[in-house]
Image (cartoon, rainbow, N blue to C red; front, side, top):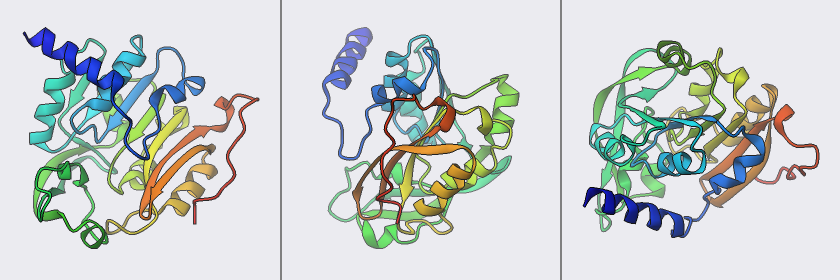
Length: 250
């Protein structure tokens, strides 16, 4: 019965309609090897990790989720997949522990995916822009930098960083001094407004990554406060690939 449920979940995933603003993962193929090492940070329930596992069966997927209740669902979904490992912690800009601001439901939308807005940063404009989301508690969670985690787990390289860190992307990347030079692709949720206190807004994040050898290859910015952007290290952009004109950074 469990295997049948798993098959049904995989079929649904194959035919699901992508959410607005989502960049299809298969679109990243030209920039990655056939056996990519993927770090899925802020993996939530594991839908992305599950899809990476299917698209790149020769690759390795490392999935991180700091909220214990959500991690349980993540591990239940992908923990048995042979090329996926899950970690109940946050990747960040230091080693140790940190306060994690937990998002929950409220108002007339208690059943929406409001737990995916939790962050290491305190909420700011998100409280006005998305009033159905509530931040009423914090929990202490374990935190590692990417460099420390990779050294502990003997992971020599990361090809793809898939980041949904609710505003913490910039600080995380700035702390990844040893591993970042080997990264080919970064898919990041970006902020155009200060949804979280201390967030690195998209223009600054883009400029910082460009200074470290990356270029923007795709933007999906359907919301006033942000969207998703793919950055690729310049030497891994195919010669015949046309880079998009800068239009959404401001």
